[in-house]
Image 1 (spheres, rainbow, N blue to C red):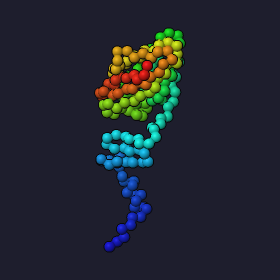
Image 2 (tube, rainbow, N blue to C red):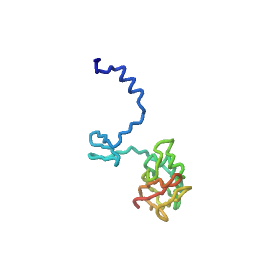
Image 3 (cartoon, rainbow, N blue to C red):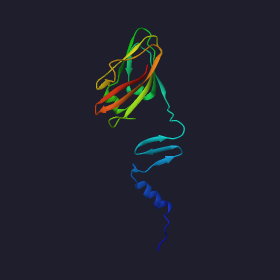
Image 4 (cartoon, rainbow, N blue to C red):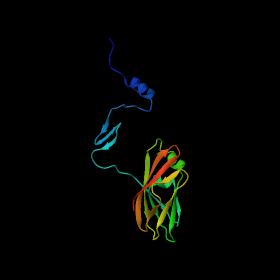
Length: 164
């Protein structure tokens, strides 16, 4: 019988031949206080912390582009009259920004925080493939909300507002 030990060179060859995707099946992957299972992500200690950039819109009206959504925090200063923020198209939102964070399946979501730091009310408008969850979405002067986009089909998203 030979040795049951595997040398470093053999391990390197085996690792290089592995597929890059690993299917854990119904296993649980646990790291400190984080568990990822088939039922979802569980953070049992602490909080999930996000890194956000500010995307400024310094005009009366503008577009909530997928790039701005991905930055996470949109600050809109509308000062010359009531403004309108038009959503990006469903196709762009589903594709993600630069291929990052695409919505690859129905019910997946992406969200951002919207701050109206101007002195005028701002109303949101839909775009191709985007449905507003309510008839109108309006954020008052000096108000804020969270905007959530949910993929509802291969070319459709629904836009929700939580807050104001």
